[in-house]
Length: 570
Ligand SMILES: Nc1ncnc2c1ncn2[C@@H]1O[C@H](COP(=O)(O)OP(=O)(O)OP(=O)(O)O)[C@@H](O)[C@H]1O
Image (tube, rainbow, N blue to C red; front, top):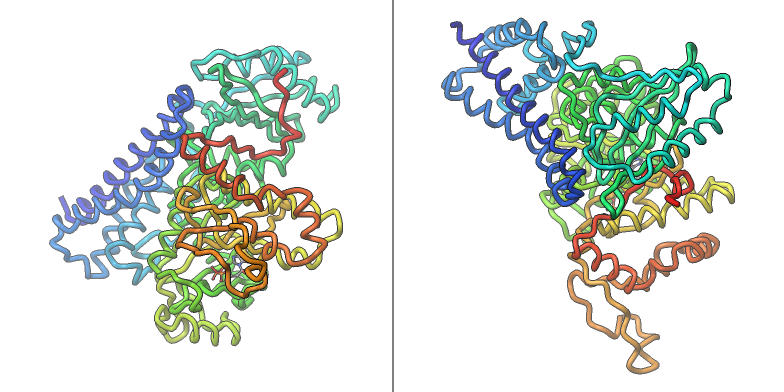
């Protein structure tokens, strides 16, 4: 056998092994849910994220044995890619297999010499239609005037091996929600289509479906939870596009959904999530490394169609990150500065560890996901003069000059939001109230999920297009359980209160929530709103209570929808 073919086959077999493990971990989601084993849910989430890099490493080691490291002839590399391409036409996950090939290549060549003849900068499989799955992607439930019967069948067919607390009640709730949303005529003729596989995340099993007429289609999402009694109940019925978009949002953990042909599932989902990019859809179903490939392709296509320049991101400049953007793009690019401001006592490695922690932790809808890139090329003609000066000043050690372009050794790409401090400057009274409520909720939900945000100033949060507040400054985050929440001791003497230095000793890890009152909201009006909604955040007891729950192993419920959308369980 030609060595090029052997190498191509080794890479594809390596990918098979990786995706096999990925499916295996994913398929355990049902049992973890049925056993209410929430710590195992969290462990599986982390484990699944690590699989990809681990298997890339295994393949690279194998290839080094096969080739004795003689990769360096361009014609040889081109032939390997040709051999690999020939293996893909009948392959069920060809698009991700291409990504895996790219990852192996990048690992060996340290992200250098990336050209379309040697790796899959763009997919060669994109023209092909998703193949029919051996197992159908969805099941249909025509309403034909009998909504209750159709919905009862949907719940009956749920593959989970647990009883319903009260299926009749839940069917009634769902039917009522649909009757309030759609006209009787429309509903009578509607067709319900439900994904065959359940989408598991955190403590919920999501029934993901569509409800359609001849001309229109709407999402039909029903989160199913487990009561204390070990019985199932439907918690909500979401049919708005915006609601679906939030459920599949970039600030949430990836779903565990069994997808032997992820491309087909992505296309199926696209119909109810039209505003999501391909990268976001792959990410939502856990194929986050392929999402990175798609994210880069989306960036290249954007650059191809624009003559915009990269500019410094609007807002307060970071002390740790240099952040830039393109005016028309919905992304920001974040580079770790070579040197930090003196008050930042972190190293580059610690900052990267914080970003990795966020990737693997449950983001509970409150922390933006990031994609990490190495050797990222920026054409010089697209860099604004101000940004170029900033790059040369702040990250010279990360820049490689390539004549017409520069390469940045390392950066993160993240969804762009409106920094909360800027949002507040423009907001109406109603928006102010809503966003301050959201801000406090974000801090609370992060804390309940064992994340202490550290630096909780407005500038470190963004507002999404749905008005949600999401945290994006990770260099000071830590686990809640690492913090010592203290009450400020009573002053010993009247002069203590007037002294410029505190009268009490402060150890590393000490945090005094009473102090938040002074620095979180300096504006009086905002402080009043904040105090009326979130006064509990100023009490050390509140934070210690959360710590207590976390250390007892309590995993908080996370709802990707408003509390008012929840069904009551009477
Ligand atoms: N996802 C985002 N969307 C929009 N703007 C952003 C985003 N991330 C960062 N920014 C902008 O870049 C600035 C610096 O980002 P970030 O807070 O991540 O950097 P930092 O160096 O960690 O900050 P700090 O000095 O507070 O530690 C933010 O204040 C904001 O204006």
